[in-house]
Image 1 (cartoon, helix red, strand yellow):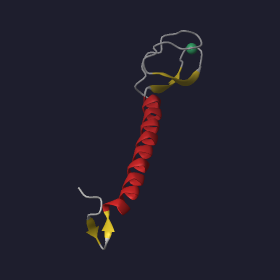
Image 2 (cartoon, helix red, strand yellow; image 1 turned 90 degrees about the horizontal axis):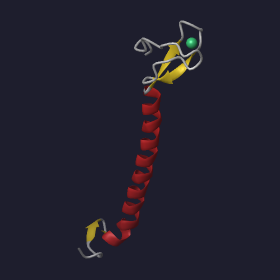
Image 3 (tube, rainbow, N blue to C red; image 1 turned 45 degrees about the vertical axis):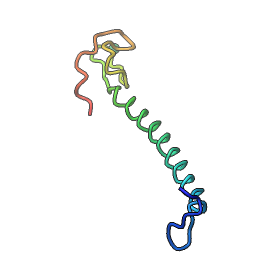
Image 4 (cartoon, protein in one colour; image 1 turned 90 degrees about the vertical axis):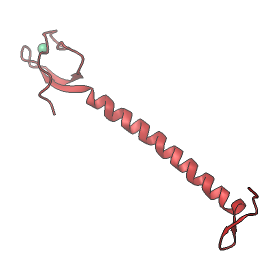
Length: 82
Ligand SMILES: [Zn+2]
């Protein structure tokens, strides 16, 4: 395609290209931010609020952790937290 091709109202590809690039770059930055944000969210989803019935410890532990971090008692049911 010729860079002098007029697209509309006398604008040429050459004039629009920097704006197009700016939009692409902004979109890329937005995507990166979104990925980081989504990762944080996913990490939070992998933790569960847990109150130990043996020692009373409470806090967020990994959904895959099955024991109390304080007294090492089995964590048991973690599905309650929402
Ligand atoms: Zn405990």
